[in-house]
Length: 141
Image 1 (cartoon, rainbow, N blue to C red):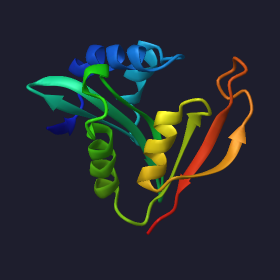
Image 2: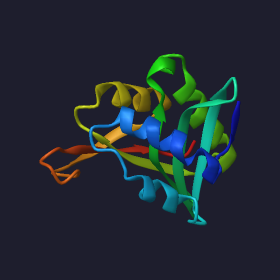
Image 3: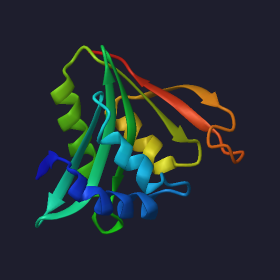
Image 4: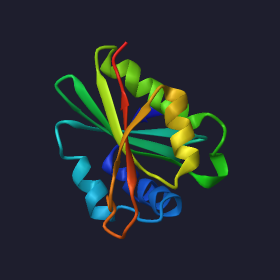
């Protein structure tokens, strides 16, 4: 089940974040997203347990996929795809999507390509530790 996240989900979201990324967000940074009027946070539940989340920003006709992660025990089941499809439908068809992803994160890059995203550029030292990122775009259809 997909639902809008609440602050009560913060610990679950943070735990998934920490287990999913080499450079995870701080808990307070995730919490701040709940207070931004242009940010949306949705979670995916299985048996009332949060197993995935997505954070996006929508400003005008542009959306940014800020982060998406699935609990390790629930990966490769299409949950990330379902979450993104839900938000994409919610925002509508005329939206230009963009995101940044670590160049070494091949599984995420392949997932984003399967959504229709294309790599447009490389951002040097994006993560501040010498690690580069790809900028990816999904044009409106």
